Amino acid sequence: MMPIKLTELIERVPPAVEEKVRRVRDQVQPAVREALRAECRLMFRTPEEAEQKRPGAQVPVEVAPGYPAVLKDVQFPDDFERIMLLGRYRALLEQARSGASGLLRLRDELLGRPEPDKWVSASAADLQSVANWAAALLKVLDQHDPLKKVLSIREDFLGIYQYDASDLLADERAVNRATIRLYWGVIGLVSEWFGCGIEDLAIVVLTHELAHAYTQLGADIEGRRWAAPSFAKAETALKEGLAQYYTDRVLRRLERRYGGALNVFLGLLPGQPEPYRAHQPWVETSSPEAVRRAMLEVRRWNEGKLADFNRRLGAAQKELAPKA
Image (tube, rainbow, N blue to C red; front, side, top):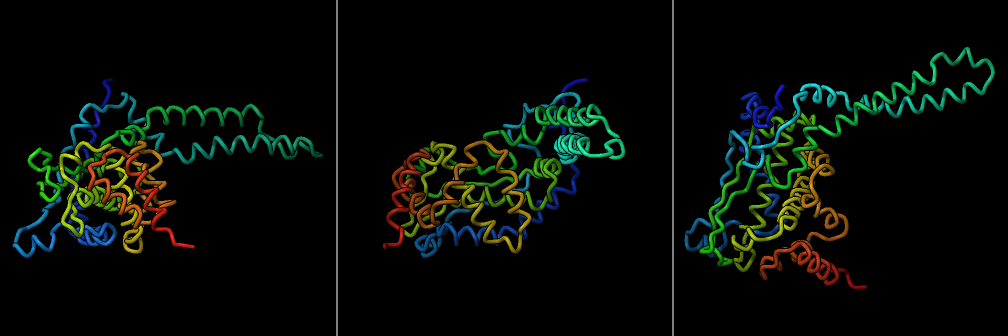
């Protein structure tokens, strides 16, 4: 048998998934945009642009078939169907591994009490065999888990934020063309593997890509944006960290309406690459105002490294801390 390509699996996703992702795009997008404006306090259209009847930033969201190029060469072993079967039983396998070990301890205690034959019928070898079998299957699953493999990709693959980063747009007040694409087939496949609702995952992807758009194209009170060429050159951990931070903020803000999406976002985090977890210390230790100030400063001074942001965040946190 030949290895199976991820792209072949994407092509098998039922067309009904597309309609669910479109419904999220149409019905949830306004609430996400409003929450992002409130959290970032950045705007796609400045007062000056409105006064001069210029359109400002336009970021249409497309629900697209296919997949980003980064997924083209991803493939899985020829026993993929068996791996998927193991995946559906992961929780039970984990319980069997730990449970059998606990039963061995119970067996030893019962053997030390009166009438052990009345209470102990399973041999230690039987119980150890169950634990070993479960552990062996979990090892195979961990080595070939398709979800683990795709989550390790160091680029956005469920959706993408595409923008024009030509040198002509180096002016921080320039408005570059930008588009968001949500890949409905990829969203459908990953939601099946993760065991979550298609709509919940689609909300996470939509929020993340719109967060990219707001952190780059959103204008501050002085009309400054993150110039597209500078944004393109910025460190991945900085760009993804900011997008993840504002995804976290927005999904918490909208938790009463879309609580499932927040659970999916938090559940995916442990398996994602380090750049997608750069925001976690900011969530835990920094105020939203300090994060916003640090973001505006690195945009303003074209500082594209995560270390630059963290340095400015630390300074902002000290300056904004309540005085004793």
